[in-house]
Image (cartoon, rainbow, N blue to C red):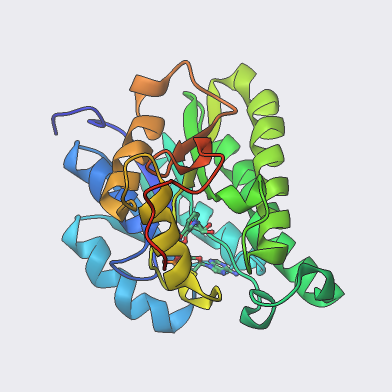
Length: 264
Ligand code: NAD
């Protein structure tokens, strides 16, 4: 294979369907010569992920629910058996109870707080521990975050708190793994209508708000986030680690509603 990712192999975790951000990243890596392995969460998603993986001639590493350590270990064992090592790992996994992605943050339950933190934040560290063992020549670990980590966004609630902790994890992991040549970064993506996003209250309003107020006056696509993912997984970003890279049409630099923004 030729291209930026020629000779590179890695795992993309978090494809649910062809609208997933993880799928956008996988396609970009494949288009540039990389080989991609996939995990899926449960049998329902297996039916969606298997044909997508086949489209890219990728490896299916198996079922992985990050709350089930055995499934996590099995996927990494499969990858090690097939490939020996990996060059990149994409973590595009988050979950919170839909009932708490609306209303007030202050009403968050202890149970959902813990679950959200485990799936959306700790899981990055869990996969980094396993990826470290497979990245003997260095590598790139990438996760996905959102602006709700930095500023309060309507309905994002406990997920915003989890993303803030995830972004801090990126920095700590970058320092721990840097001496081994392993880089750890995040893309802070603008809002995109995916399966996970459909759980967030008033999501259409949020999309419109971004479209009217972002410097580029539009939202972003999974293919565009995919291209940023390609950069962060490739050697083009070899000097970059611990970074939260915004792919949001510039929304995060804006301090106020645009004067020309229509009412929504
Ligand atoms: P998506 O629904 O396509 O992907 C979410 C993935 O998380 C799914 O594949 C799901 O199987 C996986 N997942 C959830 N719980 C899991 C568990 N216990 N074990 C293993 N996998 C689990 O939605 P998406 O929007 O592509 O989300 C990918 C990432 O991008 C998430 O971290 C999300 O927070 C982040 N993100 C999304 C947006 C957006 O607007 N869509 C914006 C910024 C960041």
